[in-house]
Amino acid sequence: MQLRSIKEKWGFLSTHKVFVGCSGGVDSVVMLVALKTFCTDLEVLHVNYSLRGLESDGDEQFVRALCQKLAVPIHVKRVDTPALIRKNGGNLQELARNIRYSFFQEQLSKHEQGYVALGQHSDDQVETFFQHLSRKSGILGMSCMLENHNRYVRPLLSYSKSEILHFAKAYSLPWREDRSNYANKYTRNRLRNIVLPFLYAELPDLKEAVLTLVKTFQDTQKTNVYLAEKAIHTFKNSNLWGYVDFDVLEEDVRLEVLRCFGGDYSVYTELVKIRTAQKGKWVECGEYRVYKESDGFLFVLSKVNVDYLLVKEQVNELPGVFTKEEIYLDATKIQGELSVRIWEKGDRIFPIGMRGSKLISDVLTEAKVYTSARESCLVVVDAVSVLWCVGYKVSRKAIADEQSQKILKVQIVEK
Image 1 (cartoon, rainbow, N blue to C red):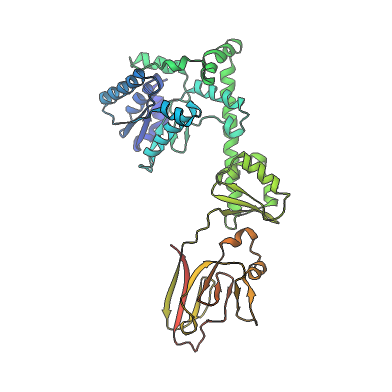
Image 2: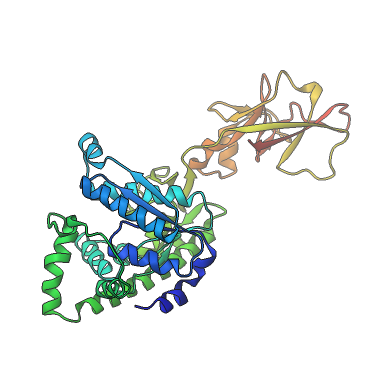
């Protein structure tokens, strides 16, 4: 492990704000010192979980002193983790991870071009692989940790723990030892302290083989992401994922499509189930509902935005060409105030060009509006009738013509 090679690979960080997650252990200390040699805008993030009493406070003081020596600003988040566990229960390691990443995201949100640097190394990668393997993870899980992903970077991921220790000793760097790393009540610690040493002794090439396999999974995942984004591009305008396009994709790619909308494997299994159900069935997927339609799956935002403005503008004459984006009404024929709302069952309109009235539900059916999309359709009404089924039909009741003396141009815009 050499500073020169780190700088060659991660030199682009020198032009960005970089937050370094530093626990005080040897990995994060080495990473901090290495990045400090070429990054000019560094800040350290440290979490004191209050899990080990005076030792936790000692870690914090050590990191503060190190930052003072290196002239690097530090942000500390102190959390009474034991109290949170007593109050809410749950998994300690999962809670600690959530606390940590929430802190990181809070800092990243203040700097659009910033990065968080984490100190994981190749030995951590192997441990992660076996943990995910035991959980029957898919390709995404078996891809383990990435060196550069979503503004999180791991500059030491290609180096081993022994290389990091050698670097720290060569440069006489101090660090703190966390005794909880030797407590074998945690799965990762048992892997690190018992299982993997035994496997390495029996299979000397195991680590290299695992890392090669992880790289293969990562390459496969990149391909899946590319194919998923390509698939979404084909239906992003209509939000209808046609069955023909759905069927040609491998399951892992379909799953990746759903992840882009906030879904997971459980959503995928439910989606497959409703494929054979009656039309109109749906599943939750992030902020969307995915409806089963006759020709595909339709993605509709769960919370329909009904916060619209009715924009009225008096004009002197009618346009030469009409569009679906606005209507022109005779102000003298409007009864009461104009307003916009979601259509309701029983609403009727008196369409231009036909006698009598028509149910809005029939208008939408004739326009082949999907059942799942109808709940967001808008109507403009006055005190007595529907004057516009927005985007589909205009009423003859108050429509302006060449004889109209007071013409209103009416449009709908989101607030």
